[in-house]
Image (cartoon, rainbow, N blue to C red; front, top):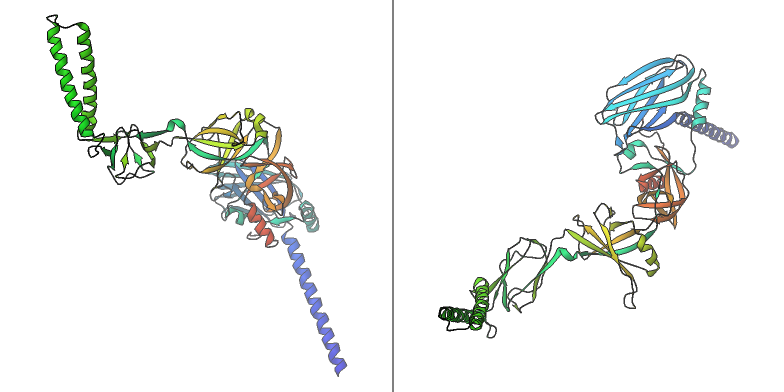
Length: 503
């Protein structure tokens, strides 16, 4: 009895294994057929076309799925008329769609009635323009096996590739671009401090000594102040020495005395009772006393000075406290117009010979990934120092730029100073390169939904682009933005490249 029971258990296990094997074979066969479509990519009219065509067999339904992407935004085409013309051995079929079947996707279904070579012409017309694509080197087969063999032969296989469906890339900050060749030149990587330009900043000083009082509590650092606007009053009447009221009274008395004496001598001069020298001396004293008196009467008649700004700008720094005693000539506040700034970088002496060949620079804010070019800021290199010392062993290099509002005087920025050309090299955007354990990688496009992780060697960088010395060819296309998304997708495991598509 026990023997029969064991035989039954073994037979049941064998049946289950056979069933699992058959199920696995069916899944494998289904997966093979699911991925056995022909994939083609084309670029034209500012648009990317990624087309998938099921194997074409005479008298069997064929599905053409077109994924259309705007290259300037890498977002799907959401409106527009599509016309597909299928030419099978001279027999044409025209299919039209007034709108996409779903965002970014046009789907056409046709049934070829004869075998032969196939050319597919697809034209997309939308509000922003139009694009025309030609897909050729296709064939319709009599036998289904031959059609699938042809599709399998066209399939691209990469062991180190990751799938990233169009639906995912459309919803992400993602883009691809062709590998570029450009003149990178030499790069001096350094840090620079932002400083106000010399002619962009003024200092307002006290003309007399006394107690300084702000005219408004709203005057703070960073606030704007117009030309001629008063900032404070300096009361010099309360001090024992250098009392402004006393000075004004003395000036008034001296002015009246000098005036009377000059007028008296003028009347005597008509009778030739004074000499020309005496009259000239009296005139000089009168004019001097008048100038002193008018200056004090105009600005200090009340015993205080009203301090105004000569031109408008932003208050950079208030150099006194409200109610503080200030002396004549003391700086009261600094005003800057913030229209132009200086970037002062310090580089090592080994770069001295290269500084005469500077052709530009890129500037990156330390709290941002945005990179500005010197040209876009209307900037230029002003000068660089020709000597160093023990106290300052670095070479100071000064640039001048227009303030675009993102630069804060006193803060630091990262600078990539460009020197003369070093030849035509392959470059990619800096954000396209990923580092992993000291090695560098980019994702190379196989199809718009399949990307190969490729190790590369890097050279110079100017903050925006990185030179690739090995690992890329000039005719390849790489992921420009969104490399980290591909990496995360790869770490999560392989994904069916057809995920989200309708077949």
